Structure formats: structure tokens, C-alpha cells
Image: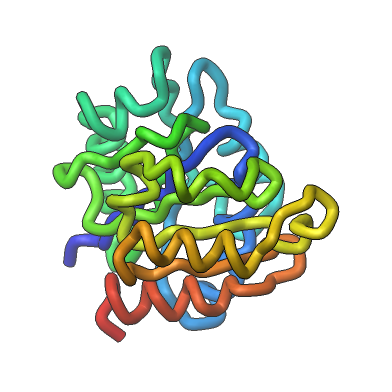
Length: 201
């Protein structure tokens, strides 16, 4: 059985690693066999953070160093990530889901269909309520848009309801979910989306 591969992209600081940390306990509770690949420019920082968190066995978290713009290894030449995913499947027979986190990138970051079956794009409220209106490829093309840190809206002068409405409008009805990862808000909806749309459960 080939594991489903799900990409998680978005700008620096939007909360991609925090989202993975929030998702993993839900996946474990559901009995979904999971592994993670992180992508950073020249470090393994995100992988080390996930390993330290203890939510997965260390061998289930692999790191890819892009050495260039992060989108290079998730779109232009995803061979390093494909090799890492293939290795995880060899090492863990029965693996069902591989989460592939891109290094922080801009709104134009997208995933190659050769690498992932489905992908999420993460933005955060503190980045500004105009982000959906900028209509970057990541916002428009992702299978799921995650608007993170919704609790910060009143502190940064953002009308959250309007921001979410504009996100849904520019995405022509494609799914948008608001989250506060550190409070586990909205995370169950993302897991339900993955179970339904990716794992067909």
C-alpha cells in the first residue's frame, strides 16, 4: 500500500509546524499510521522540534535541506522529497500518511502533483486581512486553505469574519478552515477533511 502524501506550505511564521504538532495527536487517536518530512533551507530545525516533541518516533521524522528557495524542492525538482517519502514507506510498512512540510515561502508557493496527492496552504491572521485579496497561487490552488491564529484578530485590527469570507470568495467555495493550533481549535476539522478527502474514511 502506498501512503498518501499531503503537502503543508505557507509563509514563514504562519504556523505550519505548529499545525503538524496539533494534527498528530488526532491522527494517532484515529489509528492513522503517520510520518513527517520537513524542508528547511540549510538546517533541520523543524524536524528537530518535532522529534523533541515526542509525538512520533524520531525515525518517522525526516529532514530535507533545500539549499535554495524552499519551493524548489516541492515544485521544480521534488526528487529529494520523493526519495525521503519512498524511504519512509520502505522503513515503515503499513504507513498510511506522510505530511510534507515546506520551508516558509511566499504566497506563490505550490506543490508539484508528482510529490503530493493533496496540499494545505497556511496563512495567519497577523499577516494581515489583505492576504486573501492578494490571490497568490498558494491561496487559490491549495486543496485546503488554513487561516491560523484567528485569536489574534482583535489584537491586530483584523475583521476575522470578513477575512474568512473573502478567502472563501476568492477560492470559489473551496474549503477554508480557521484555526488556533495552540488551543486545538479547528484542528479536528482539518483531520476530518484529510480523512474524508485523502484517506477516504
